[in-house]
Length: 183
Image (cartoon, rainbow, N blue to C red):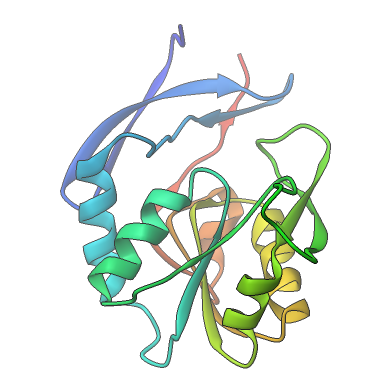
């Protein structure tokens, strides 16, 4: 159990996030939207007003971005959104892939799109969505994958921008999230 907590206020919601060491020097506030319908719904409504008007489709990566992408697509009246998978599933024909490195995942992993998702993305304006943008590694991989599929990435959006990501002017986010010293 975490001894320290960070009180987050976002989209009318307050959450106590545990502060967790991820190295001997760095700690992060653990933000998990899975199962939290209130925060997902409120954040999607708030983000919807900031989405570029020419967005055709939303794309996210497994896993934590899925509920936000789903709700945001619903609020925007979109019938579909795209999920980049972390492994090839039996139903995925002719997948394309890129490598991904994230602050919260040990080592490198891959992101995959199946051929039907590639067809949905080809020539379209895509907004990349995740729960948190930190180092930008996951967004970079999603952008490479979307572009490999022939899409035009018109924005990157998240609920939170962690650490130095909050200084970026090229992303859409609702609140900053500080980084912490490890204890």
